[in-house]
Structures are given as C-alpha cells and as structure tokens.
Length: 264
Image 1 (cartoon, rainbow, N blue to C red):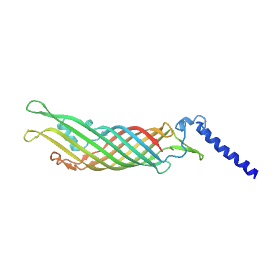
Image 2: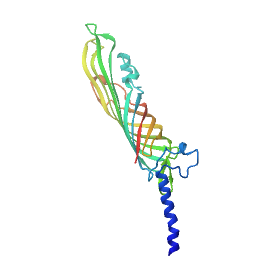
Image 3: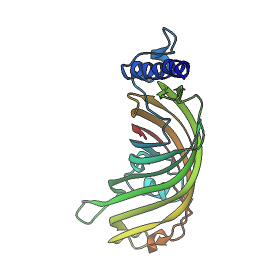
Image 4: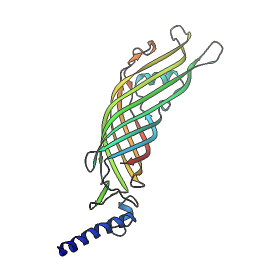
C-alpha cells in the first residue's frame, strides 16, 4: 500500500510542476532560439480554441465593368474609382479540423459621389448636378484552409498558439446591392433638364477567393489581414424608367482588409 502512494506522488508532483512552469511563462519543451519564432509570445490556453471572431476594415475596389457604370462615367463627371469605397466586416469562424475552418461573414461597402453633367449646363450656365450612391452588402460562408499549424498542445495542460498562420479559402453567398442616382439630368431628345431619382436594388449570388494570415499578439487576441476577390452580377431588379435596357450590374471587386481577431 505504501509503495503505491510513493509511486503516485511523483506523477502528481510532475503535473503540478509543469502547470506552474507554464503559468510563469516558462518555455517548457521549446528548443532554445525557436520559442519566439514558433509560438505566439508568452502565454497559453487551457484547451485548443474552437471559435474565432474577427472585425476588419479596409478598402473595396469595384470592378464597375457593366454598362450602367460606363454610361455614368461617359455622361457624368465620375471615374471608376468613384464606385470604390471603404469596407467594414465581421466574421465568425468555427474550427472543423486542425487546419480547416467554416467562416460566416458579413460586410458593408458603400459610397456616395457628387457629379455634374460633363457636356451640359442649365439655362443659367450653372452645372447640372446629381449624386451617385453605390452600396454592396455581401453575406457569405467560406472554407478557410490554414497552411501551417495554428498552435500546438503541451501534454494535457496547455495549447500554445503559433506566432503566424497563413491561410487560403473559397466561398460564396448572396449580396444585396443598390445603385442610385438622384438630382438633375438632361433629356437627350428634348434637351430639357429634369429632376429624378433613378434606382436599382436587389439580391444576387456571389462567389469569392481569398488569402490572408493571422498574427498572434496574446493567446486570445491577434491581428488578421486578408486580400479577397469577389465575383457577382445582379439583375437590374426594381428599376426606374431611366435604367431600362441596361445589362446586369457588375458587383465584382477586390477588397484589402485588416483587423483584430479573438479566440474562444
């Protein structure tokens, strides 16, 4: 009976010693010279995280390749860059395996740009002014494949995150869009100036591919960055009379974003 108690004591003592060493930030079982490169700084989690929440902001470049954009840049003082905008988004990613996540995402992109008729003025030689508003709201799901391990377990007691984990991914979903022009316009048949609001909006399918990476700051928090290209084309949907006859609206474009992530 006494020999059984003596044999069990070293095992319990070893477990307590390992936990204390980790809590003190000791680089237990990490070769000298590699801890800073491989692990995400000091600290650890008691289990491997299963959810990661991210908030991102950046810039969305609109391809603006359909004829409604060509018509606008031809007759109004707009350029293609006027349809690009800032973007804000959020993502909730659920771990499916050691390197694979299912991510649910939502984002907002939108900008209103003032303009004038390029070649026309009104009867008082004043500019004929209007405002163009282009908004996109994608709601998507993605599969994210990490190209390196996001962390490693130290026995039964801790999970240590990696410093940096790059990933690639693909996905798809739906995008709400609205293209609106409001103000004064010229009737090219009568040359009359009239006031109107032309608008099209609706939902369209979308698909995307992306690449990015996560940089650990603490076991729970880090920085994330991503480059994404999304493709989509929408019907002109609900249209005002002025948009009749246009082809499907181009919703494609690239986004470059950065932000914070939180592990749980």
